[in-house]
Length: 307
Image (cartoon, rainbow, N blue to C red; front, side):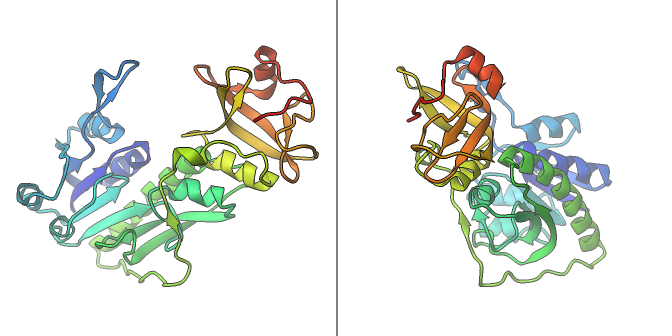
């Protein structure tokens, strides 16, 4: 089929590669414009999808908006059978949604209708969900409201981070989209409307949510740590200079004390109820380190009270 691919981050790369590998004709790749990068933010770096598309020799377009008549006309001129959208980052107006002969398919990282919106991977873990999934959905004007064609369920382990789930999901999602396209091509992809019950919205992660609140129950603290790892990262201030320390991995532990109290020499921290053990940390400007390595360079003796 003639396919327009629309995606931006690493999450979308396996799907683009799978589509090309299955022999479809990718007539254009839409992605976000190169963004400032480097230590001083002076270098413009193409998105991961942009870089891979160029290696495949595909046509790449980076419009800032798709709402103009010119953008709609350019999109329609691709004469695509279908558009495949994976974490693109721009809203698709009606003229774009209606242009491909078979519509626009979106790969979404949740079990819809739970966790519609911007941060479904993080929100599922932060909420303590035991499972999530990837869906291939027919796009419409509502926010992730379209009917679902295929679903792959994924269990969430008790210590799984958002990074772990992201990497698992993007591989399964690529295969799911390839299967959906094969079914669509032969006219065998059936779509089921989403149920009205069970809707939850995965709002964008706000900075205020990232600081660890040790007064909460240990399970809530642990779920927040792993749901925000590796980015943007749950953190706490350390020492007289209040140096920011991200916690990248943790586990539930035995213990009790004043919330924020360091209970032992293994970085077990008391919470509102119960305790968590900090397994991997990253001090601002430093590389990630295991708890023992972190303690070699930072004095955090038992009895210390973390803010």
